[in-house]
Amino acid sequence: MTNTPENPETPTTAGSRMRTVRFESFGGPSVLTVADVAVPEPGPGQITVDVEYAGVNFAEVMFRRGQFPVDLPHFPGLEAVGTVRAVGEGVTGVEAGERVAALALGGGGNAEVVAVGAEHTVRLDGDLAGLDGALAAGALCNVTTALGVLTSAGHLAKGETVVVLAAAGGVGTAAAQLARSLGARTVIGVTSSPAKAEYARGFGYDSVVSYDEIGREVAERTGGAGADLVLDSVGGAFRLSVTGLLAAFGRHVVFGNAAAEDVAFEGNHPWYTNSSLAGYNLGGVAGRAPQLLRAHLEQALTEVARGAVRVEVTVLPLTDVARAHELLETRASTGKYVLDVRA
Ligand SMILES: NC(=O)c1ccc[n+]([C@@H]2O[C@H](COP(=O)([O-])OP(=O)(O)OC[C@H]3O[C@@H](n4cnc5c(N)ncnc54)[C@H](OP(=O)(O)O)[C@@H]3O)[C@@H](O)[C@H]2O)c1
Image 1 (tube, rainbow, N blue to C red):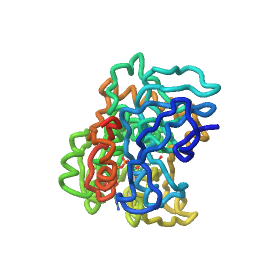
Image 2 (image 1 turned 180 degrees about the vertical axis):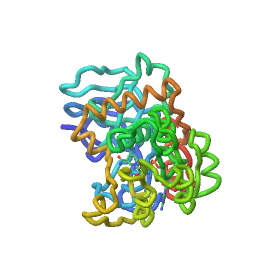
Image 3 (image 1 turned 45 degrees about the vertical axis):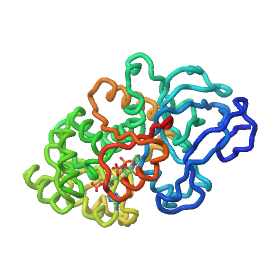
Image 4 (image 1 turned 120 degrees about the vertical axis):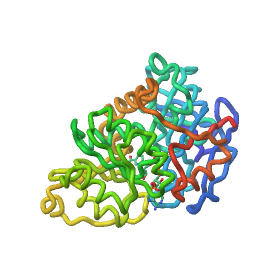
C-alpha cells in the first residue's frame, strides 16, 4: 500500500516522520500549516525524494482558495528538487541517491519527502549536473509551461509579435526569454504596476506596459496589424478584450485564471474574429502527451542550466509558505518563490 501524507498512520520502512505543508480547509494563506506526518513510501511507478527545494506556484494559491476541487486535507507543492530516497515497483532509469528534479502533479512537494511519478522526474546529471537546486525547482513548472504555451499551444513562428500578460511573474519572465530565443520579433509584456514593469524589462521584453496601455502599444508596434500570439493566464474581463489585440489569424492562448473570474465566448467567436482560442494545461499534457511533457521538462531545465533562460528565485524557509502565497495572490510578487525545505 502506498503511504502518503493523506495516510499518515501507515507504517513506513524508514519509520520516520517529516514536516509537510498542509491545509485542512479552503481559505486565505493562514489555512496553511506545517504539519508532522509519516514519511511516504513510493507506490508502483513512483519514487520518493528527500526534498531540498520546492517551488510555489499560483496554481497552489488556487487550490488553497478552493478554486479547483482538491481533497482535504491537501498537501500542496507541485515541484521538488532533491535526492532519490527510495524507488517503487516497476521504476527503471533512476536510483536511490541520485539528484533529481520532479514534478509532483499530485501535490505534496512542499515537504521534506515527497512521492512522485518517476515518469515526470529528470535526473540532474550530465549537462544538468551543475544546475542549482533552487533554480531547478523554480524552472520545473514555469519554464516548462512557458515552453508549452509558446510552442504546442501557441505555434509561435519566427518574426511574430507576442504579448505576455502577467509579464513579471514566474511564467511571464520565462516566456519573454523563450519567445525571443524561438524567433519572435517583438515581445511585449503587460503588468499591473510601474515597479513590476521595470522588473520585467530585465527579461528581454521590447516594452512592458499596463493593461490599460496594451491596445495602443500593440497598435503602435505592429503598425496596426495586431499581435500574432497573446499568452493569457489572467482571465477576467480583460480576457474578452484580447481578441482586439490580435492580428488576423492570431492565437489567444488561455492557460490560467488569476483573476478568479470566468468569462464566456460564443461558439462563433473564432469565426467572427479570424482568431484561434487555444489552451494549455500541464496536468492535461502529463495525462495525454507524457512524452511531450518529459521533453519539455528536460528542455526547460537545460535552457536554465546553460544560462539561456534566467530564472530569478526568492528562497524562503518552508515555514514561510503562507508569505509566498500572500505575495502571489496580492500581485506583490515578481519572479519565482522557492522554499528551502531544510530551513
Ligand atoms: N495551465 C497550466 O498548466 C499552468 C501552469 C503554470 C502556471 N499557470 C498559470 O500561469 C500563471 C502564472 O503562474 P505563476 O506561478 O508564474 O504566477 P505569477 O505570474 O508569478 O503570479 C500571478 C500573476 O497573475 C497576475 N494577476 C492578474 N490578475 C490577478 C489577480 N486578480 N490576482 C492575482 N494575480 C493576478 C499578477 O501579475 P500582474 O499584477 O502583473 O497582472 C500576478 O503576479 C498563473 O495564472 C497560473 O495559474 C498555468
